[in-house]
Image (cartoon, rainbow, N blue to C red; front, top):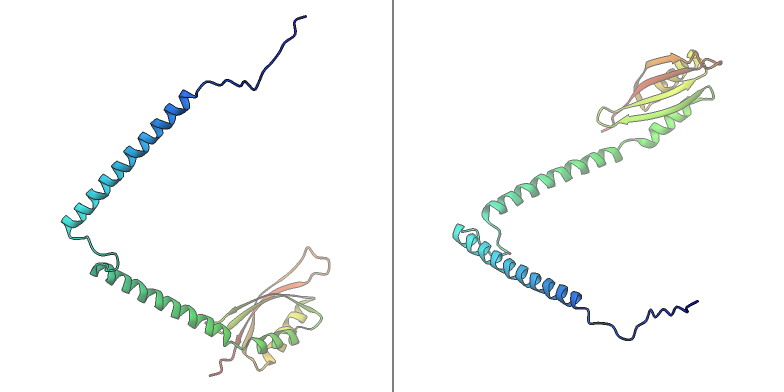
Length: 179
């Protein structure tokens, strides 16, 4: 059998002509692209000068100033509107509302959701009661609270699939507005 000798690290490598040619071609393309960019930039400057739109960077045109001013006014008005909405939400009698709602519920009523509407001064309350009498008792107890000006049952439904047949209800309660 003939012994095979493999030499993977040859001390004599030929000059990589293909790599040198590829590098020279890439540098040539880069120089041509740079020259083309400078030519286009000069054309843009000349066209801006011809149309009268060439201005200093710190001096926008009157049309741009008017648009920026109008946009700033619109942004300011939106911020003021948002700030007023937040202020209105914060000025609501949240503590009194929560205390009145929680103290009226009792053991036979479970509250499921509360959806306050600050603009209309109304809170929509969803809950589940043991029976219709418990739900109506909850409505009466809420109506007796000083915080609310009116409370009424909007809808109710007996849960037939549940063996205890609880009543799901939705009521609306309007709170009194204090100046």
